[in-house]
Image (cartoon, rainbow over all chains, first blue to last red; front, side, top):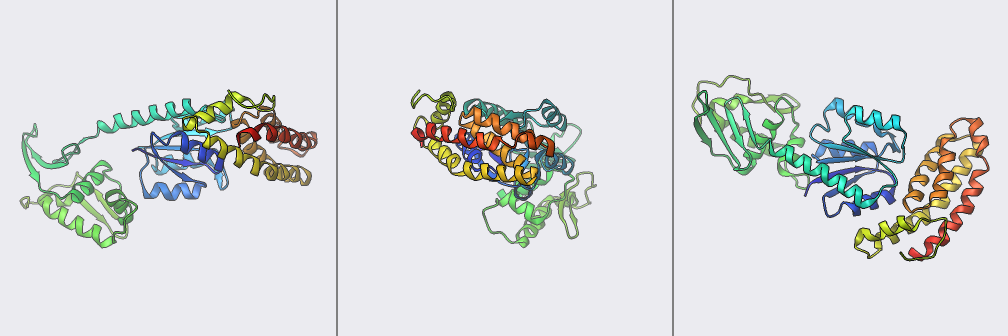
Amino acid sequence: MPKILLVEDATDFQLLVKETLSKSANVRIASTIAEARAALAKEKFELLILDLSLPDGDGMEFFSQMQGERLTEDTAVIFLTAKSETAMQVTAFSLGADDYVVKPFKPLEFRARVEAKLKKQAQLRQHETVLIRGDLRIELGKQRAFIVAGQDQEEKQALELTGREFKLLYHLAKNEGTVFSRDQLISAVWGSDVHVLDRTVDTHVYTLRKKLGPYSRYIESEVGMGYRLNSAKAPSGKRVA
Amino acid sequence: MNGPANPSVDLKAIDELRNLDDGQGEVLRQLVRMFVESAPGRIALIERGLATGDLKTSNHEAHSLKSSSANLGAHRMASLCQKIESAKTPEAASQVAALPMQLKAEFELVRTALAAFA
């Protein structure tokens, strides 16, 4: 099921939105901007539903900050608010909001709007099922990764990766250039509900690099920060393991 | 459509909420309970905010109560909240100083109408 983060402090609307969308998605709730920020740093959501009047700040300002920090890059955003002024709606859309729903809302109509957004998100993601990063080809559907060579990528050498190694490589490749902390990688690869040591990430990066052979340089370490993928790095002279 | 006719509550809104959980009405009951329990406190904060010049509080509480009451079809109550929420200066606040009394009276009508769904 897709994941939705609802940022809303009113308990009646928390209940209403959760019940309205219970058949379409897993709805997580943040009552404040601080809680929302923590949740977004920890895991990915397909959709963010954001109130404007929150106890610790203004939802519009928070959205604007998130855009700058790329926290909601792959996340659709719907404002859900009692503020019906046209100026607010124009501002929201100009900042990149996907929809603006004024309270009170009709539950069934709201569900349809959300489902339409989730469907669009899923379609967008389907286009990302094959990633080409330098000489790496990563096929999400088949859970396989290859080193490819030749102009038409006709020569393929399969990488024998474990499930976790594949997920790690895919996550880094999908977000090439972004440095991920070990905590973020644990959340993305192992999930947020499990206890995994930082060392486990390092171990998996080590084995992944080994299997990438000359392309191990694609995975860069940023001291004190984490890891990122950089496919612009030239491979070393070694052969793939 | 069920429940008594009462102009303070729009039963169409109630019906939409009742249909959320396939007509069981549990979500509606919870929403009504939450509203009835929280509204008196919010009205008191609005009244105090207007009386002491704490317009940030009166605006915020009026905004929240506007959403919650409109959600349950209590449109007259929502409209009173809207007027209070719009009062952002001391001058404007003095013009709406009597509205908390009307809000209390309207809430009693709404509470009576919603009792059938709690």
